[in-house]
Length: 338
Image (cartoon, rainbow, N blue to C red):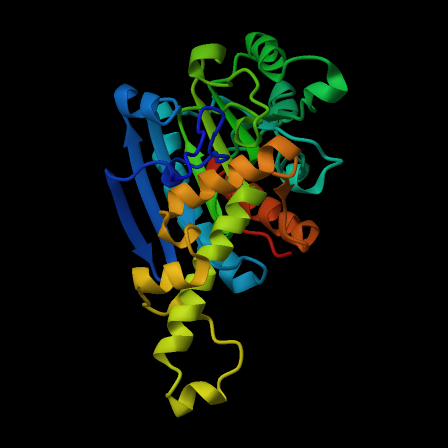
């Protein structure tokens, strides 16, 4: 009798639309940087439990050195303008930037860290001291409900009613369902955000529907769940086995140490999968992830995991996003050097 996977409690832990949409993607390449543009109508959005809107995803390899960071920043600035332009901001427009997340938790501190570096100018406009080339920008870090006891969406609703901004931009750490996307992906959308949804702690949405002003949400995946790590590892084992088998008699391969087989075009035979993992080897990638979830979740071991170097990378990501916001909103801001 075959194993029947109970999926009624299964939920993919991801905030990324690109991991849930199979078709309708527009892909653009800027050297080694990939941009995917997805427009979800209400029907397709409902199928993947997302809001309708435009989702722009930027994938890159590294932003920890100056040159790579500048390359990614140019692409980020270009793509961000696609979401800002329809709002039709002018010299009198006010933009409210909100840093979501928990400063005390490294993988969740992206929002507050970005706000630390954002160029705030609204107070200068209040005293008529704002120079040409600078927009009115206000910033806010609402904290998390566990600290404040207040729903973030409710807090922002009242703040927006008071400030009356023309645009709200939220920054938040996200969850991914693939190890490869951690700290190497930026998602931007005009659909807003449900804070905490990727880690199963869904709060009230922050969107144009709730705040009554346009909302752009920018996020980076910094955590992935254990079931995704295990299923990804099984997939990597397939690729490693297939690469080793294919190159077993190749003398050149014996001289290489630590070959990155992920960069190779490798296919593993179904029979080899079954030889390696038996019944598990006969399952699809999705079914393996479901199965691992079914095993880990009841015992509380489907942990959310972040890379060991997260404290270093999160600072670089915060600098990248804050620089991009400053340059996109203020025409007189050029660039900064870490």
